[in-house]
Length: 301
Image 1 (cartoon, rainbow, N blue to C red):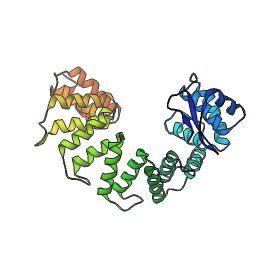
Image 2 (image 1 turned 30 degrees about the vertical axis):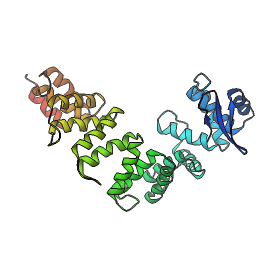
Image 3 (image 1 turned 90 degrees about the horizontal axis):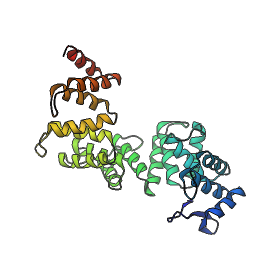
Image 4 (image 1 turned 135 degrees about the vertical axis):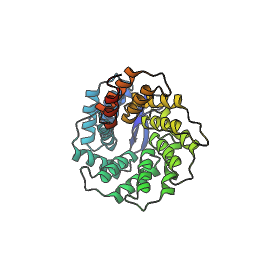
């Protein structure tokens, strides 16, 4: 697969003679001759600022031309940017087709995205079993997001025979490789004893790893764990409040409600009715029904 060289001074290109490293001037010459790999590489350079100032317009234009000429790396990159909400030039049908094209070329990321389409039935008839096979192929190439998706399928018995032990093993592999979604799910597995023995300490450890990568749902779960406590973890209202506040600040509605409650009662923090109202109103505005009830109780305070 074409991409920037490790020293960021050139690009590695796939050719009929194998992989070669070329400089940016050679890339520009290849792109000017409408070579698909050259257009992809130069588009990548403009998109991500590799040897070039960032120019997303020119970058996407080159990627589109490379994709139209059949370059699978350009296709899968356009799909990725579509999934991330940075590119709007692909309709659903073309997005799925590009994913399939890249998957057929054995590109793991293409297999991942085509698996997502097959699982969700977006632009193609839903086929969970085929989705699982796509995820499996991508996971075998080291794609941890695909491994995480396949683990969920084993967890739920969707497209495969349910096997929580296998799901746990896959989550653990992806989590150890740094996949934040799997790190969060490891916390859930240990907290609930799904596919493993229950362990509050292990659940907290994995939630912390996910939280360290910015997972707001993990922050919320840590707040709950410090609120409840157990034989291995002493309940700590102050820490619970701090974690709920982090999660609330990152958009978790239940945590907004919890922060409002803590401020209203002075639980884990100094009592502050004004702050309580602020967070409860935020929760209410985001559809939390109980927040409105508590706001009514605080109306005359």
